[in-house]
Figure 1 (cartoon, rainbow, N blue to C red):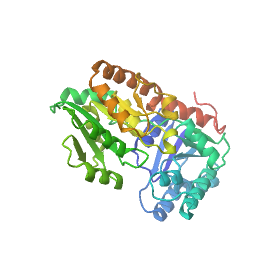
Figure 2: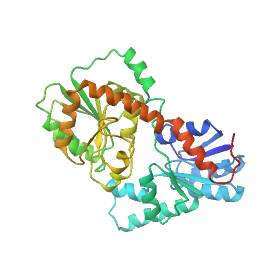
Figure 3: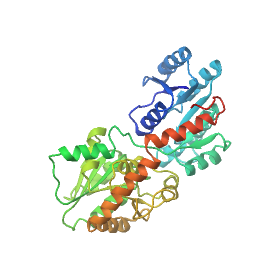
Figure 4: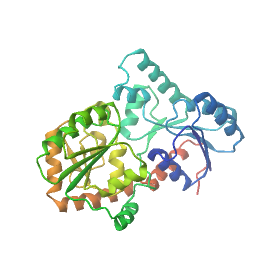
Length: 360
């Protein structure tokens, strides 16, 4: 089997990295990737793909526009088209506060989501809850929409990388460091995190590191910049970010109260798991299906600074709990989220298309 990856995707982005590495384990791979403006890349990728000999064309995230030219290629070559939708553009824009539900621009994003999914023979999302939401919202046949979990970019986030780094690291931190990173939308609950940090500001030895940038991030930075226990840092490279994860005593996931929280397991949850780190995140349907409280992670009530502050103190005062979480989270990641696990899921889905004989 030969799989051709197609689109304007970032190959280093965790979701895309995991898919490419996973597919490489059972198929030949060709990568057609362009970051040029839409019209230029559409023409370039279209003619490049026509010259390629492949069994399946695989559009990676974000491919909500690239999927249309990919459909034309597959129609001409009579090949199946697989689309890693990953997230709904409409859903994301509403969650980020960029558009209003029911507005004309929201309807436009709905149409693009719907039409892009219609173009594909198979559509992938990241959790069963998200796949169910997508099927119902966009009225897609359940057999057409499937899922596999998002994994980390293991070139940066892995247990082996952490061990190698800590063995050589000269930087030694004092106290108990809590790390949060990301673009900080209402979905992520960054305000809740800062409020929890404020509640713990009188506790000596607890330091918070925040890495990111967005209008919500800047708003909280301006509000809490006077607190010595909080450090607000700009976005950084994956290498530097992974090293901050390695050095942290605890990592934070998401704590908002938006509907999307119930459907997804975000990267800021998966990446610390890949590194075998103690993690605190809010309870949700998607998380609860996989992660057990006090075994893999600490789960807290959504949008509750008090619950988060209590969980941070619990971790700080229980080294044995930290060790248990670190051990179990790494085991779970390898079994469920790793590139190896993703490979098995994708292999099964591609064979279910009935375009191929089973690869042995």
